[in-house]
Image (cartoon, rainbow over all chains, first blue to last red; front, top):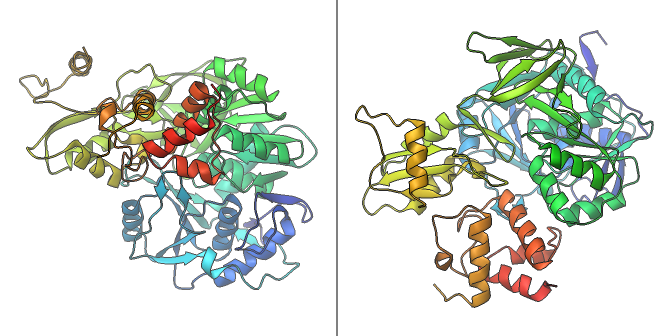
Length: 463
Length: 89
């Protein structure tokens, strides 16, 4: 092998890579642990089943183990994974128009509490639950991957489909996982059991619950439990040492549930700011250390802090911040081709440590999903029955704040129709709630709607 | 729309409070209408918020793995019935 390649997986073949919380009919594996060797055999078998005439793949598998198998099989096949930030049908269509020969792989349409995923009818679909992974042969060898191979494209904005693509080569993931593992994983010898409450498709889940399983001593749980009692029961089954990857929204629910959890070594939390109070509470109920991670979808994880003890972030070795004239920060690193303008203002305290100093105006963060207010307003303005309106993010004293829309609609148009319009284009968390219908917005004579005036108007609606 | 029972009305008030649904009134939630998907259009974070509120207000723990929880989340009526049946407080 030349030095321009690196192995698909860098672990002992006998170690475990995943814990299946139920029998996996797609691979023929029973509930329980899956070894690296078995994973490799399965992945190579699937790579031979993939279509020859395709190039881009949307991996919608909701089972984390199957997501990992599909990801690696498509990498071996030299297909590029598209990682949209939502599962909307419009997003799939937009991606397939933008990227040639796109297809979808899924493990059955994900039936969740809140409806079923849909797949764009024009796309070629590989349903693993029907096709299964066949001819799995033992003792496969670890393939090597070209470091320059484009393995994935993620999309920056959490709000709409016209997001900026971020190209990720194999080298991006190999290098970032090494750094991430150093800063995020507990220092233990045994294989660490990792339970994640976040989806594999998003950067935070991808970096931790997917790529760490390839390069660090990690065994991932295949499911994505949501409710505290589900999480507790899964953690009880796993042998120590254990860790969890989560978000402030999930952690808040875990703490509030008042149930007892097994000890964890580490809890990793990212996607939106965690309060110090909750950080302390989480350390107590899990008897664990909490590490909060700061990142962005373009670069990935960039810094870490022990939020129960300090406000100060430690920037990862190899990540650089350049302050621009606008005071905004341009982040870059050797293993990602492009730089990213951050949505936060940053104040360096010394060479490696910094404080976050508020967000720039456009970027909003709801339950860990980042979106651009500007883009969400474009979606509002594209509603044909709209006369005037604005979506904004008022200060709210709620655990999970939501956007608010104030609108004037044409006669005989209902708010429900507008909500349906939003639903077609936006991730559910960005759908404004409430939508308030008014006769007229308080615009100034020049047509402007200053933020102060808008907020005062909004408050007056509730008095 | 079918009429709400007293328990359903209280649950509707709780949902509106927990889920920032101030643009509709409690009476407007049809007991038989789908809460998730195309009905009220709730999302996964709402599911977590509802489960949290239900555990705090009624002492009922919900588990996504249980078929009964999936059924409970279908409508205002099914959620109310589920809580009434399982509540401890």
